[in-house]
Image (cartoon, rainbow, N blue to C red; front, side, top):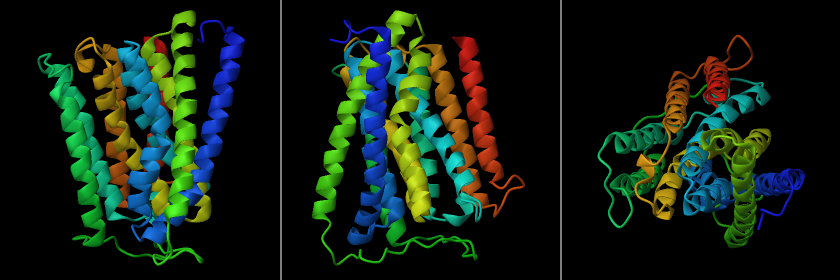
Amino acid sequence: MFDAFTLTALLAIGGVAAVIVLISGLRMTGLADRIADRTGFGEALIGGVLLGGATSFSGTVVSLTAALDGRASLAFSNGIGGIAAQTAFLAVADLLYRRANLEHASAELANVFQCGQLLLLLSVPFAAYAAPEIAVFGVHPASLALAAIYGVGVVATSRLRQSPMWRPVETEETRDDTPDEGDSPDQPARGLIVQFVGLMLVMGSAGWVISQVGAQLTDRLGLSASLVGALMTAVVTSLPELVTTLAAVRRGALQLAVGGIIGGNTFDTLFLTISDIGYREGSLYHAIERSDLFWLAVAMIMTGVLMLGLLFREKQGPAGIGRESVLLLSIYFAAIAIQAMLG
């Protein structure tokens, strides 16, 4: 149905969809913060699972739609490229939070654990690519492994928060996760959750529109699917993470901000599971291009840097932000330059 639109009209439609995604994401941040307070699950867990998964919903739709259309590289690079972009967003949030290094102030063991889980999840597609091409009912076993690792990680993160065996050192700059005035665990969260789900569905619809626009740009402009997926659809569908992260930092919900990004990144690996199911021409991991693996490596490097930053907890870097934030931005922009050379 998008074939009849001119290039200008397509860009305008994509822009409107992006604005819808942005507005929905902004509203969802406040709801997630209140849900965390009312349920008692905490900002890191709600940010990592509920907010992270919901803000990734539009990206899920993009990858699934691309896979159903037989566009393996677009489906793969959209999810992996989004992980790199969203990790870079944390460095942007660090610029906004001027009191201290964001990774220092948001000390939370659950976020460190999820970084380790994300590195494990990102290693699975590499193994699948190198392994023989096999599929059970059209689905590679690696896709099932991703879903299993994610599920176990969610349960482990919840238990870790309830009974941590390690605790971060408290400093004058550490921001504790305390309920906001007016929200407490004895208040019902049902109404907030209904609003949250409604906004998530709106974002999903906008994501479908963005996927169609991305596919048209790939065909009409002769761009590579990796380029469109990693730097166009991935960034656009990752905008909710940027908005929600900055909004959470302004609200002082630092664990929610960091947890939302890391949790969204772990959820984004499930894009590959969903895409592999939707791609009916064989194993998704053996239909991608070599350039797609480049963004997989970039995502792993950036996640490793973030994890080390969360462990080292530098109070304040020489540039007003943490050294890991400077490194994250440098890696991301260097990757963009390399992708531009790859075409």
